[in-house]
Image 1 (cartoon, rainbow, N blue to C red):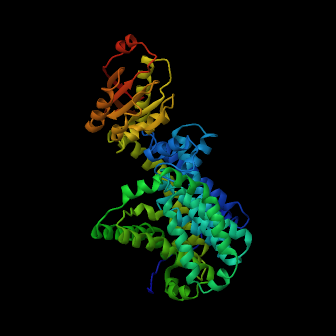
Image 2: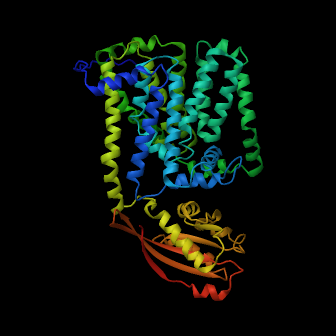
Image 3: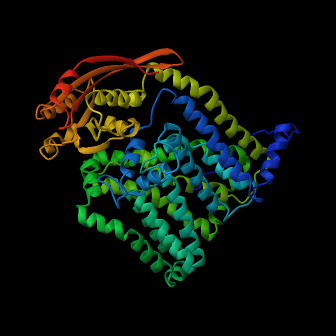
Length: 538
């Protein structure tokens, strides 16, 4: 459907101020190869500063802690997810320390890689300022900062989807053996990130079938080589699924399926609406820059070249296939799952335009995006940190590290041995595994919700511990039930208070259960019996 736009905006003439001169020199460096790397480095630096300030009183999101916990064991798959996110976290922590800032840096590095691979697609169709404009519009999305901070199975798709799309585009254009191999391998990599990538691969197939050059593509070896390579890359994971009961599929079916028609229809509509609303701001910025030339939208659409036509059909598939699946199969379809594919719509918006954007308007966009990011880091971040000192993050993240330290100190009051295993509340178990100096193993069998399985693990000779929020009666009751079956037990309650720059903030209560190692004497355990402690987070 064609929509006629008529936007009249008055823009000042290019002034010769210092900042404009510097920005213009930077834009001149796009095709020289240094302007875009500089933009991506600046993006990482600014938002790294934001995270450091805004979350000065908070720890990592549970999804990030889960990612690291899974990666401690290099497997071909995990109980909830495919393995890519765990592999990346494992590789990252062989170089960087286990700290909040290092995982924030991992998240932003992943975002920078995602933006760089998106630029690989953009440069197939445009040059110079338009390449920068496409990236700057993407930076107006919340995807590459706030969504990316939760480095999990969704976040890894930010880089793998544009990479797979670029390789498929090159394979479709050239039909060469090299790009066919790259397309198959990158598509398989996306699947190893999250099974949701099946919608991207299905979009590749449908777009190729519907494209007017389909005979040339399917008459070559490219699609068959890509399919074979993709299956070969996935073969170890497929074998793992076959021999372990396909746990991720069982988890997905249990967690996300079973909705009735009306709720699933609501999920589908919400998914599509979210995708539209998220791209609204960068789309509005483009309309303002294009002005009266938006009247050419329909003509430009009909004149779209074959490569952009392929991307257009892929973009439709990435949003409509999940929505249709939600309705047909009665599944959840959270709007956040649409974010990794929205880069396609902005590429089409910029690259599909037959006209150039004046340098002054590109300069204004660049200045606006950078100024906004700096203001957020310098003004919004301190306000967020101060607010969260009194009104903690919903997951209890203000207290993760302090709670892990308290539990570890209490454990070592009982024994000199390192804490081997942690259970209780799942998020607190992830946090203790990460933040405790002992880095105990996260044991799924020791979670409060899985207490019925403890006949198999209650006999840990090396001991274990469980940690719950004090207000979580179900978790506390489950841990007490577990503890009642063990001969060497300490129940320990404590309260923590957050502080920010010496200002006391919110408090949170915790209940810990310690099952001492079998080798420890009963006298030492009794001397360390249950009590309560109030501590302040420094």
